Image (cartoon, rainbow, N blue to C red; front, side):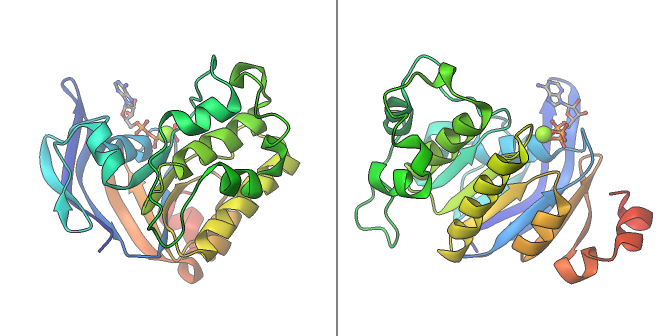
Length: 233
Ligand SMILES: Nc1ncnc2c1ncn2[C@@H]1O[C@H](COP(=O)(O)OP(=O)(O)OP(=O)(O)O)[C@@H](O)[C@H]1O
Ligand SMILES: [Mg+2]
C-alpha cells in the first residue's frame, strides 16, 4: 500500500478535527477526498504531511510509519504537497521556487527536473525569472504543482489546486493532473469540481465532521440523486 491511514485523530489545541479517519491509497491509484467545507479534508492532508501531528492512530507510507515524524522528513520520504492556497514563495522567482525544495531522484521511474516541469507547464518557461508574487493565480498554481513534483514524490497530494482559477487555466491544471495520473503517479486529490474528479479518480473517500462517511467508486458517485441524498454533496 502506498498510503494507509488507520483511525487517525487530530486536534487543533483542544478542538478535535479528525475522529478516527481510515482509508488507503494504493500504488498508482488516484483517490479523491470529498466533503463539504470544514469537514476535515485539509486537516487530513495536514496529518499526512506532518503539519499536524495525529494524537491517536497510525499513518503508514510505503510500509513505514510516518505519523509523528516532522514535515521535512515526510516530504523526503516521498510525499509531495500542493497546499491549499498555493503558498508559493512570493519573493523568489519561478525558477527559485521550483528548485528551493527540490529533491533530485535521478534513478526514479519518472524523474522530475526543471525541464520536465517546463514541459508540463510551458507558460512557466518565459516566466522563470519573474517573482512569484507578480504571477497570476493560475501561474502560481502551476508553480505550486511544479514545486511539489520537483521533490519527485511517490505520492502527490493536491488540496484544491483549481480553486479560484479562471476556467481556461483550471482546464490546464486538470490536464496536467491527468497527465500525472497517466504516468501512474499515486495521487490524493481534493477539489470542488466533482465532474472532473469522477473522470479522474479510481476511488472516492467522503469526509463528514472529521469521519469517513462513505467510500466508493466513480460509478456509484455519478448518481446525482445518491450524491445529494446520501452524501449531501
Ligand atoms: N488552524 C486551525 N485552527 C483551529 N481549527 C481549525 C484550523 N484549521 C481547521 N480547523 C477546524 O477543523 C475542522 C476541519 O477543517 P478543515 O480545514 O480540515 O476542513 P476542509 O474540509 O478542508 O474545509 P474546506 O473545504 O473549507 O477547505 C473545521 O471545524 C475547522 O474549523
Ligand atoms: Mg480545506
